[in-house]
Length: 96
Image 1: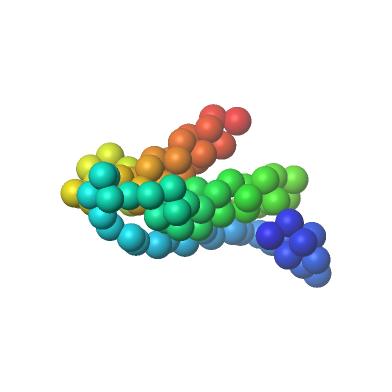
Image 2: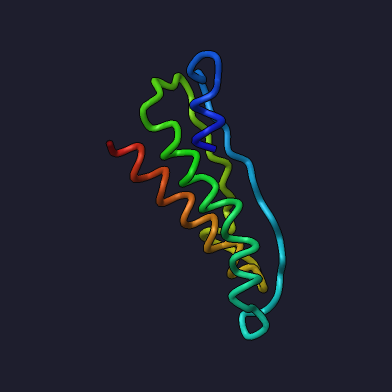
């Protein structure tokens, strides 16, 4: 991501992050691998994009989260955690 942003012919005016993966299972059936498969694209991907574009004067930046971070359904602990992390990233970034 850093290389992509750095290699752009001109600094990007906006970034959008809309990654998301579902792998529903009740919590006792979740594994570290299933958590990582869902968490990484949304939460870690957004954090990586955020760091890569931090020095860029953006006109717009959008992270697409889900209400699952607050009200996730049965079997969506991994997806809810990823969205909550994305919300926290945006809350922190907006406060700066």
